[in-house]
Image (cartoon, rainbow, N blue to C red; front, side, top):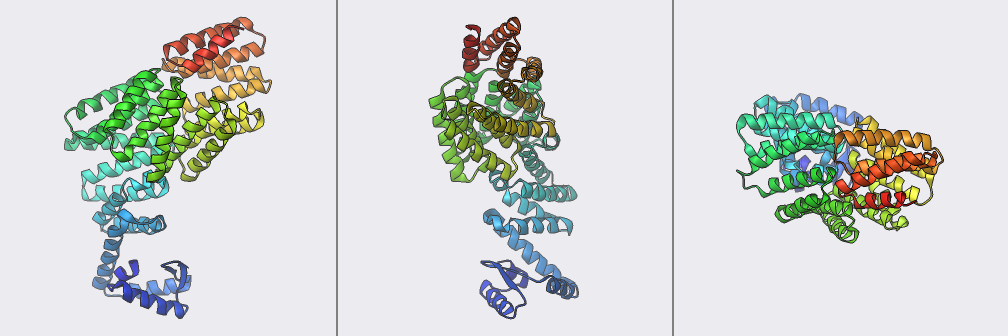
Length: 464
């Protein structure tokens, strides 16, 4: 326990001393195994500590930092604030290796469990400490961890900046595996900004570097990235192959990510029952490992399938859970997707006001993050809602914007969705020729991008 480490005594002795202090009302219980001081007593204790012999004070601080370094890998969430403070203190008072060590010991747990606030705090301290002592390996690890936290919280410019930093440092020390990982993050950054040719170039470079490595985890990451790029570029069959391969080489804790991607690709192909099986397995794995962001994404996938198959109450329940979970942990992308899908579910339930509110919240998130793809995606759904509300002119404006955007990106399955939405808006305006032209464009885009649901919808519209 921390008090024993600070006092240089045993755990039993520390407990007896704490009990004595508590009985004297000098400290009070805050929670099982935890105590707190009154503010005045804390100030007085600080004054007493300030006059301790410097060597004694330094030894006590080292014992306390050693304690936090030891417990960091398995510390309960209730201990996170103390670990973050210990990391900050170590980084700012000349114990850089303790700061680096605490951050490294917490490692992926903070990201996996969705504690992005603590992740950003401790890895910033570790990054500063690593810079101060010239530890390039630790700088790469901290920059990588910061990049992941920035991605999850929708801070995309910072995500790309940290990924570039990690790549530059990895090149400097000649570490191929770290270069490849940074390139995969740069590929993600390019894709998020609609730069798909650049995203594929980063991916190809990463795969070239990994051809000289035997790291299955990094290879699985490259296959996942390839799957998502292929899916977003209208090649769901190829994406499914990538995700299937990733599931075979991934570490046990990463299989859920591959199943999640596979469910998404199968949904695009209209293989809904098989997709549901993949999402359900992923959900079980994520819940088993405490991966809260993955849990939310699996709920979104299952909720979307429920909506597509008319199980609207189930869809609503799952998507509400996903919104609440994503919002609670601060996962920007998960909350955006969940709110957009929930809006579509409300629309299917005949609840246009709630549908508009959910999608408007998603649109606000996308605008705030300067997420052009998100603005276009939410705009498609908002356009559908506006048609239902009898406001087809506004709907046509949103669908035209989305259609222009996805045409510019090229070969995106969403182009078919926007074209169909535009056709519906024009039909509501009485422009039959314009509606049929838009639906015909939707059908062609859907066939090109293997978007089976959009193709079926466009054919139904054209048969009117």
